[in-house]
Each structure stands twice: as C-alpha cells, then as structure tokens.
Image (cartoon, rainbow, N blue to C red; front, side):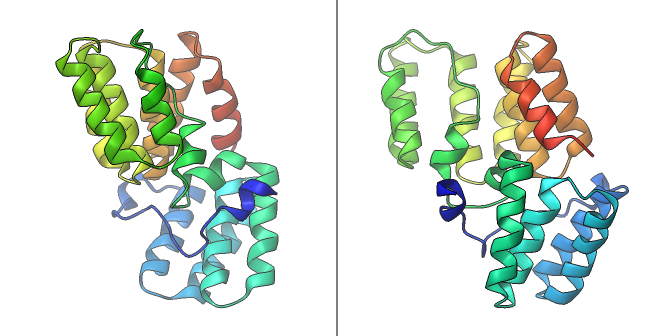
Length: 226
C-alpha cells in the first residue's frame, strides 16, 4: 500500500481531447474524463460505472472513478477503488495520476549509454529533480558521451515524468524515425496510453516485447487486458 499512499487522487494527467481514440470501453473512459473536466463528478462516475460493468478487471476505470469520488468528498469509496486498481493494475495507478515521477521512473525504459554520469540522471529523475536531469543530459550530449538517439529517449522520458505525454511522444517519434529500438517503443507505448490511445500504445508494447524488451510483456498484460 506504500505506492497507493503516494497517489494524488485530485489530479489527472489527461489534458487533451482524446475522443478520436475512443471506442467501446475506451470511449466511456474518455467520456468520464471529459465530464471530470466539467466538474460533473456524478455523471463521470456513471461513465466509469459503465466501464466497470463491462470490464470489471480493468484497472484504469477504477483509478479514474476513484478520482471522481475523491472530488465529491467520498474518500472511503475513493480509497477502496484506488486499492482495487492497485491490485488489478499497478501501472494504471502510476500512469493515470500525477505528482509521482519516482514511480513513473521505475516503469520506463532507460538509455543504454555507457557514460557513468547516466546513473546521476536516473537518480535525479527518481527524486523528481527533472530540470537538473535535463541539464545533465545536455552536458553529456555536448561532451559527445551521449548519442542523439539516447538524448531524445532521455528527454522524452523527462517529458513523460512531467506529465507531458504528447511532448514525450514527439521526442520518441524523432528517435524512432532514425532508429528502431524496443526501449523507445516501450516508452512511446506508455506515453500513448497516457493519452488514451490504447490501440497504438498497446501495439508499441507488443512490438517492444517482440524485439526482446521483456518488461513490455508485463506492461501489456497489465494495461491492455480489456
């Protein structure tokens, strides 16, 4: 339950209109998000109830419903939904809540750079010191100890940790246009799922697993089982 205690139920990292990705239960999930933005908490809960009725073992519905209930002051119910989401899909709890860069840092793929300073970058990210991490990445790139591809991966990771998945996707796309790597696909998959683009995100995770990145299999099973 230690991870659950770190989750901010009052914040959601979905800030853009994702209706173009919505079909079936994903559409209901997005409908609930749009209602949340309008402070229509009861209607949002009904949308999430519909998702739960169709897919009772899908974690994202419970974490989003927990947020709506928390907004209404229904804390006990919110915590119950959050605990269930944590049991069903810990990664959903991590991806669909804010202010937890340390937790997100644990599930994203890292660069394969040999520079010993890379460990400092990872430590800064886990501590939430993202601006300092970005400065260190720039220094390593200027010193030519970090490739442009790895720099794009790490900068994309920082954007993801800052709850800017669309900006993260831009960095990952730039790198993937030049080199296909399972780490880039894995992280882009997570960023796409954060924007509710489950179909493309889950496809990225599948491809990353096929290319040999085993953590993608766990993420796929956790996030794409609907």
